Length: 456
Ligand SMILES: Cc1ncc(COP(=O)(O)O)c(C=O)c1O
Image (tube, helix red, strand yellow):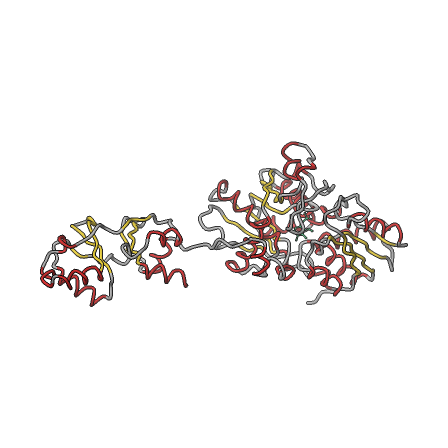
């Protein structure tokens, strides 16, 4: 079996379950991994559709030139389509886009014009205006205009929507996508809501973009517009492909939260995705944490691949320069005890025991501290070096009862407390913590356990 050209491989991307980042969140969270498209993004779908519809309508004739303002991914889809079908491509891009994206488009034979980011859309220097001007000047050229060309939405209505419906066997309850041109959100949403009007759609917007406020108030607020760094979504215009009726709610995600989440998707889920995918997942999880129920099935669309962001999000120095320091996800007390001993019994010493017995336990077991019990209750603690110091002063101490030399019990912590919190309780005088599991069994967490958890 083979394909007649690369564009026949567009679509039918896999749906993958999140296993780590959704910890503590109810329901099933799946991601639609769009980098499996041949141009490594979801935009291949609409690029092909815009070209095919233009051919049918007679707007694109053999030997023609495709001209588009693109943040890179649509350009890639158009370039692959153009190669397969024998057209030329010219693209205009905003200068905030990654150099990798520009190089990639050139690699697939396109001519690229880089335009200033921080100018009004109707400024003659903007990438929207430059694309329109080239279209007027170049004969037999076609300007798809991905923002207002409804073939964009149709592509997702005809492919992404049905794929998700089939892949989830109709069980999808929530659909989440970033909103740029709006095609991948609205085309998919339209199809899904036609199958089940209860499906909830969550649009991911960014700070500096007009969508969320427009949805909530109907006001196009110019004050909402300011430069932001995330690429591909959020807009300072209202594209025709954004149908606000089909988007139930918007959440805004900061550049930083998106960047850090993209890195976590790569490291923790093995999903080497682009920046906007991080934003989509960050916003989706924020919603899911509060709202998702056990039987819910949420699908998040991940638009593109991480290679396009190697000099940004995946460059440690770039992250540091932008103040995007990662807050690590730490193991919890539960993780530590599960890993350590599962159901193992807490080793302790009775308050009636002699100090000499404690010393032999320390030596035999290699412990540095022990909880002291009185029947079921934990009433004190013993720490090896403190006993040693006392023995140096008074050797008869070894005949004394534990209750005479013990100190206050180790501190109890909550099962959900994380490594960063746990380590704040530990110092020279408090070398261990106690935690009660779901079955009411007490476990000890020592400073060595914390060190181990930090390094594994
Ligand atoms: C990286 C990236 N993320 C998100 C989007 C938003 O998708 P849509 O234009 O379908 O709203 C795009 C679109 O260009 C993109 O390139």
